[in-house]
Length: 112
Length: 120
Image (cartoon, rainbow over all chains, first blue to last red; front, side, top):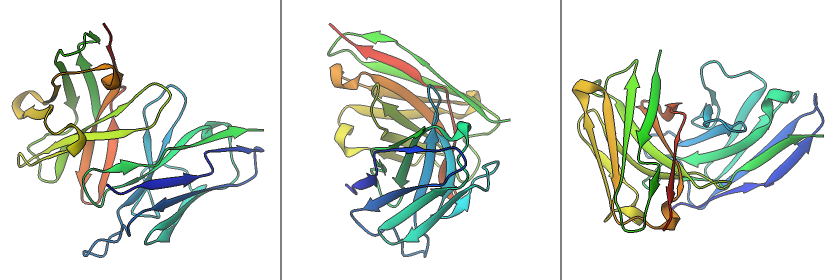
């Protein structure tokens, strides 16, 4: 199975500041079709996960432009600019390259 | 508007079978490129992908549960089903179903989840 390692596991951010979350995969997520199958999800407290970003850097419909993704191969980063109250929750990276699809352990974002 | 809702047995005893239904609207499982997937989350823990079933009846399954898990669909009634046999306490979790778009590939709409407890 592809292992997904996130860091940090928790981060406290002052509203208005930025936050970055790292995700590393145990295998390159670049498929032979040229697509990198890495997505990011946010699970707000007591809610279902919601899609933020797919294929490294593509913003899902309706997601704030304050979210951005970058990276390649095995190293990826989610950046949240101007953090707001609604950004609180747990962020997960996930690989869709091969079965079983695997999630990172999650990064909990809290406000200072 | 796409919606999904999970339903099924809430409390089970060890060795029983878990059966869940995902009822959805706003899309069809006969549409090319659409699948439904199941993910679970033990309380306070992370997400584990379980299985998916697609428009062409293609299926994928997590090998860690392969011998105990089955997935099926009823396209006419907009439902997908998950069954896990011989459950034990490790199967206690909130179970989610989600719609899958394969081009590009992601889980875009999720149900609210249904809590399943395995306890003697």
